[in-house]
Every structure is written in structure tokens, then in C-alpha cells.
Image (tube, rainbow, N blue to C red; front, side):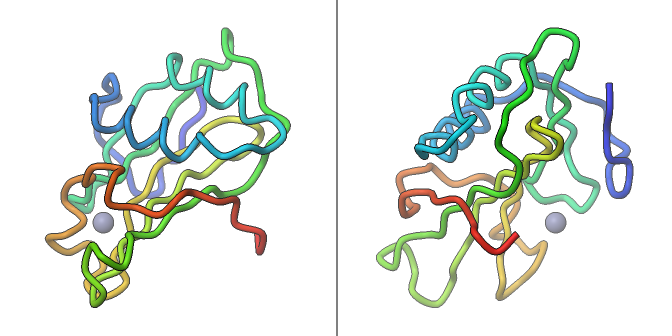
Length: 133
Ligand SMILES: [Zn+2]
């Protein structure tokens, strides 16, 4: 199985319910190849980042999962009613047609206390495909 060891040394483990919720939310976009990505969630393990954030790398079993035609980034930002001074981003990364990771990014306080857990998806705007990558 492929992985990206740049910043992860933790063992792979099954996804949590909240991680599945966040992935289902981000993968609710309508774009080519999205169905394969949705199906990969059940064949993915999580590898928590070393920084202490809730962010995870995803390791998909490539022997049993179908690759997606999608490559790039799907993201969402917190709604303004959540806290106008603190925008959190949720980002799912897809490389080589496979889910690669889910990041929570706080631009005010990177890797700070607000990035320690994935908040419920209900606090975020509808996800979209980032078109600048
Ligand atoms: Zn971090």
C-alpha cells in the first residue's frame, strides 16, 4: 500500500464515525469520478498526522478499490455564522485517483487548538472542487 511518510509515523487505523461523516460531506459534490471516491472510503484506513491535528492521511487498499478519474482537491469552509473571525477549511486530497488525506486547516492558528478535532459537517458551507490545482 502506498503512503506519504513526510509527516506521518502513526499506525493506520479504521476511520472514526466523524471522519466518515466529514468524508461523506466532502464527497457529496457532483463531479466526474466521485462515485469511485465514495466507494474507496470503505477500503481506506486513517493515518493521523504527527502534528496533533485531526488531519489524517488515507491509505486505500488499491488491490480492491477502483481508481477514480478525479484528481485534485475538494474543500469546504466554515460558514460565516460559525465564527466570522475563524475560518476553518476541510480539504480532501486525491492523488492518482485515490483518496490521499483529509486536512483541517486553521489559517489564523495553524495546527492550533481548533484543528484538534473535526467539527460536525453542519458548520461548513457546501463543498466544492478547488479549480486552481
Ligand atoms: Zn497540524
